[in-house]
Image 1 (cartoon, one colour):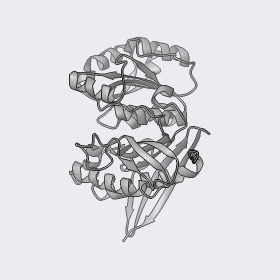
Image 2 (image 1 turned 60 degrees about the vertical axis):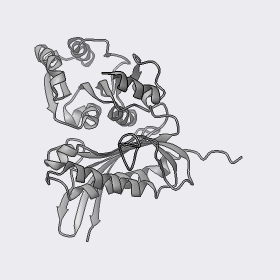
Image 3 (image 1 turned 90 degrees about the vertical axis):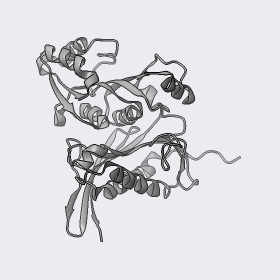
Length: 321
């Protein structure tokens, strides 16, 4: 029997960047056009075409949805040439379809790749998330703490006042009570309308973004993508799946999850080495958005490897007809 091929993250990383860039280029025509579905479909088509050029034996574990909900890049779809290592793929071809349609900040194309069986097969349910950047003692904050306790603990670890802590929270009605409690601490809050992968990544570059901590509930699949980024950049993250009904609990069972109350740390969401790429579609605090000029599209991509902790930013000026 032929032994399995090694996961050569260094060789695969630039290919992954091309996948992310292709999705961004495809969605460029739909920035500010008001058509979320068309923008997303363009990104999906381009991402799939590029993935199928890579010498991998890939399976989509975080994707556009179940097979009957998504014609392409569905969960369980096989991608790649089949001539390379067995890998898990987590992707969001266009994180921020609404942001793209309205030409608002922080729309990204996002993809992560890891050896087979090392990315949590998160069902399409909500996840309660908490994330901080690098440089802190392990478990300095936790999901078991109240929002106030988290701010107090992080301020103590940082050696500052609670009012010096800056948070990022997804602006949703379900977060109103939490936001009100956080306001009482004196901490500042950056509310975002969409894109909580970017929201979590903000914590890893606090010196650039000014964000110390992310908290709140959002999609569980996006939680795995965010954990992949933090594993490359440094930082801590925790997530707990949230279930509203039996259908959602059934999705967890289908994904092989038996402990519905488990709190996952970052390295339990992503258990092995991972590579991560994100390309800006609209301008954001992580990467610049697509710049258009006659005959060219220019993108910025952030490409990261957890094995080395390397973070590479790449500008790609691409001729277009």
